Length: 153
Length: 246
Image (cartoon, rainbow over all chains, first blue to last red):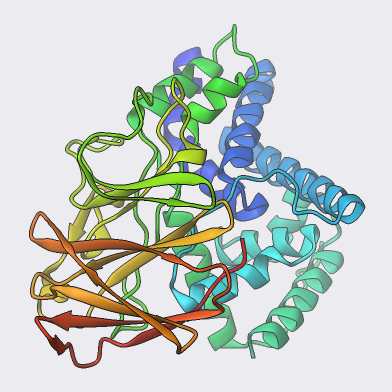
């Protein structure tokens, strides 16, 4: 695959990946880093990647999931929210409330919710992206929906 | 590999999740300059971005929009442009203030922020988020539903309804700042904090629409905004909100 193709993929995929990373980690700045790192990683093994879009999505999702876990660990230790940049408030009440509840989900559940309802991936594909058994993904989705149903009722 | 069974369907909940994720995602915007910067990052000499570059590429969201009389108008907005902060206060200041030890300015949008032309409207520049020599980091607000990837606004529906307003907020320190964009006929708005203290704020004309910004006292739990046209309240414009936590 040529360098031009890498650049083409970059131009086409960067914004969708930034959006996916933001949904996964809740921080634009961190999302930028995650996407940047994913492209650097892809570049290093570009010739071996059959499906760049799928590779990059998988890299972004899993790195964001790791970062979210680290964030929760830091918050758990310090009792603070960490160093994430403050995000402006949208002021659409239903969206604010739902987004807040989604952000509160554990990393694995949030990943499944984002991939299923934003990326429109079926559970078997989500299982492949997350490298988890489909049954586990199904359980994560069920638990996430139960949590959101209660939180938003 | 067997296909797992989906959880019991809850169409309303699923629609709400889906709509939320897409609405939130749409607030992340790319600029042409940031694309170019990051494109170099994929080259052979790429490296992790420096703190400076990382900040420069940051896609600050912008205040969301809210339609006072409509539950879900298209939201979103823009910002964080490619240009560097060269001076504070910035140019084209409409309203300025100080909150929690830091200054802030509501300014007319004159930067292109990645669009072909500067989007109509205003941006809120908060001192603590803008450092000389680094890139602007502000929150934009226009009058109308956001279109064109955040570069334009469709105000046709809003112009038919003077009660419709668009708002968004951000923190300066622990003080919540709220921006409003209102119909051209609206001349002022009143803000009541916790059903007690009321302030009347003039709106400032930018491209025909009215804009203002106010501080929510840190002691307040809620605030209620009412729009005025002259001395008369605009019917249906009252909107109460909880104050978010920083």
